[in-house]
Amino acid sequence: MPRHARPGAARAVVDALAALPHRPGLLRRPLPPVTGTVGLVVPELAGLLRPPASAADPETRRGLLPRAVGTLLEAFGDAALVLEDIHRADPATPGLLHRLPGAMPPRLRLVVTEDAAPGLPVLGVRVPGRTRLAEVRVRPWTPEETEGFVRRWPGRPRPERAGERQELAALVHELTGGLPGAAEALLRAAEETGPHTEGEGGPWAGSVLAAVREAGVPARVRRETARRCAPLDEDAWRIVEAAAVLDRAVPVGLLAEVAQVTPGRAEAAVDACVRRSVADRRAAPRLPAPLDRRAALARAPGPRLSLRAARALHRGGAGPLPLADLARLYRAAGRAREGLRCLVAAADRAADGGDCTTATRLSTQAVADDPGAGGRIRTAAKLARTAQLSRAGDQVVAAVRQVLDEDDPPPRLRGEIRLHLSVVPRNQSGGALDSLDEVARAISDLEASDPQTAARAMAVAATPAAAGGVQEVIEVCRELGARWDVARCQRLLRRHDIVTTHRRGRLGHGDQLFPREREVARLVVQGRADRDIAESLVLPTRTVEHHEARIMRKVNATSRTDIALAGWGESGAGTGGR
Image (tube, rainbow, N blue to C red; front, side, top):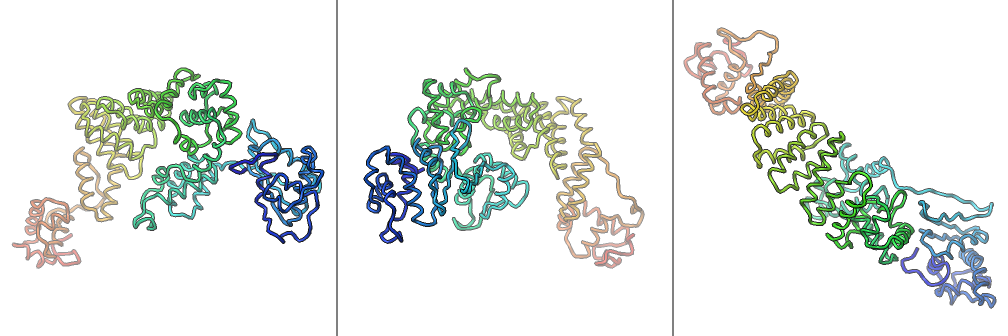
């Protein structure tokens, strides 16, 4: 439907006909007189169509208009009359469309779109049997369909890893409600505003997810929201603002309280919003997608409306209080203390209900928002317990470690937090070393304050699973030549008195060189200095000197040069070797 409706009957059809080309000579034959009826309602065609005398009477003109429209479009040949969002049209438009199929020319295609949501009228046009009718039900994408769209997206912000692609698809579906046009606009906005390495036209650099989150409301979505909201009166606008701030389905009475509109006027305003596809009323009135909410919030009056919404939820909510929503509203209203209290309570409720993922997310936010060290320490202790039972990421670990490093919890509590936190990297691939490192720090904190828990931590560190994970890391580091990482793992094992079994085989003894001595001997033959050998083998310089002394004793050498004369060449074999 056009942005500016015209006065008179069937405004949607009138505006569509006004766009018809009416250049002289376009029509190949004279038009029947009945088409002049169209010229009476479409001023742009008045010079082309001469009205018949019988059309002067309004009732007669209304009866002739469907046949006049059909005859006019037939004269233009192949034509398509497209009427969008017919549920928003004036009452005369559906009436005209009900009569138009009876005079439908064979070369005319009529395309009508309407929102058949509950509470909205269904057009239900009757067509003659000879006319082909196709009804296509258009619905938002499912999460799977959104993921397929993201996978086929040709632009630059396209993740390659399957996990990141699924996360991006879930984010796009959440923000757009599965609307195809909004999904495309959101990805294009992320492509335009995301980080580039060489200016605006350079290659993409940075996180795709971060770019989509920071893209804001695409211009296309803002324009569409403004177009749908333009005809709304002041009461309807207040309802839209209240629904945007609340961001949850609530009864009309609660919406009316937040919007400061009487209940009777609120019902009429909600109906107007639903008819304009601004709000969704499948269960209770709410805005259909987060992007619509963000677009509507641009006009909202700010903290006062958020505070009014929070207080209305406190008073009028049925069932358990929506603590997470209350926390969001209080923070938006500038009431940080009330918001933090609701946020912590929401995390505790989620943890008590077994929803550790939600509890971890809310506790992480609470740790970031809490200005007091004591509160951060208490919340970090809860966060460490729930994080080990959820798929916590690096952000959660970083938040807890920041509290441990900066807020200085008591030793016993610090050790308990570290012990819980050690489970998180163990649940991640390649995190065995970090897990054992956290256990080691927990033991040092608990040894004096809680010996019993410290003994339990030592038992955890000494388990074959923990030592075996570190041993796997050692083998991988050896294959990669990462000697410093190998030394770190070995020091960690030695710190906990963990004895690892060697592979079966004969050990060096007597005058035979040990494997480490053979390594030192090969480097000595290459002319390497003791300091270089120490760095290469990750050993103290004094240890390298001891190895050299034992080598010279075993091969009867009196200097480093004599080691080469003893038969140690590049092949690594010598008279003193095994």
